Image (cartoon, rainbow, N blue to C red; front, side, top):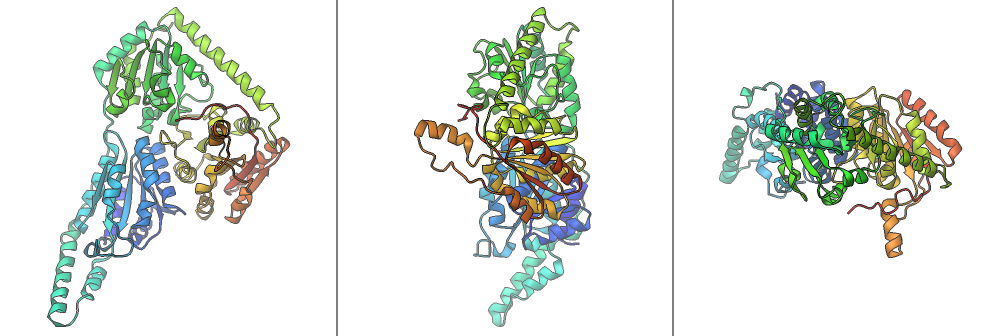
Length: 578
């Protein structure tokens, strides 16, 4: 038994099935012992991808994802991914290696003060100092990551706590020397080793920690129900916060159906009602919010996506539900707010509202018809734009073809700017928990890690990774990870040779394309170099044959990259967010 084995036992007991990592001497015992206990140890090519993968596992399964990285640069490379998880309210545990306890602050390899760096990014950041503290520190990490507003927790595990006691004692014993000073040093080192391992054999690993989501505010639910009963033009917006507990997705979807309100789904809630539910509206959300007399935001803050509240009619009643009180009142104070789980709020609201079979009033039918008509008009506009010439390939036409071939068991991972934003208008997740995007931080580079987490969580699913050509470079090396671990995914790169989302406004306003131009790089050949299958689309007639060939290669177990050379359209002109 060593510290690495204790860590592995805790992970196993907490329901962790995969450990994402990039190797390092500081954490080797954790990796070896996790493998011995049957965990899948999946090593990636960038520490950020390990954290992104852990994030995706947490979002899809409800079990905190776990990543382990080595000291120093291994830890610092996770910063962006940790912040993304924090803002997305994803529970995960990051295990960080560290230099030996005796050498901390003395100039050892990769030794830096890691806790001050991690504390602003995590709910809690702790350094374990004795072997007997490993188990309680880790179990606390799993509890803290899940309770209240979920988020990442960092646990620093010094290297001399992880190896066998006899070996560590041997290391310290060899550091003494001759003479009085040498003997005194040897005595001090042996004493330090005794302290490290005191009580280590008395460790007891507890049961899996289950944390109940915070209940919604009962009076707020009743007030919201009264407002709903009086509404003539209600709108419901459901965000990722309504699926913080993904195990309740079906229950939340049933509640939305009972409420019978027109609903806009965003973030992780995309696909919650399936592909073509009559209550779901996809387009012209701003117009609906500006006309609504009641807006209910469930797990969706008033931020840049709602123009800081200006997209909601100033006289509309506003109801907000979510776990973070600061987010509930940011930019616009709601008439009613419920601090608690947003999904549970919708479930309780459906029970409290007691919706009549004919709806709340005659106006609802006309309101629903108006929004449905706007959706249909927007779909006609999209079809017309997709038919335009945008050589080499119209991106909308490409995405419409992808929409046609997506199977019911597909999961969509979004990583990019202009191409991905366009895809969000066209692609429809086939069911709950089948869409992954960065969240409010808007991070590029999530793709490889998110697709990895999705594939290990749902091995039977076709995971489609949608890249912009700019974002693809952040994690394209993870094709190597997919190949080595036998995890097929299908990556589609919308290659327009530029950072188009930025270029649209920069070139028009400032008249310069500095920093926003790229090349028509042969990304499909890069994939082949990593051992995957690569395909290229250079004209419209190649789209369907390539998609079918890619799915066939995926079925044979190959990771696939489709390098689609696309042109630009005016579809998203003027859509930059700040």
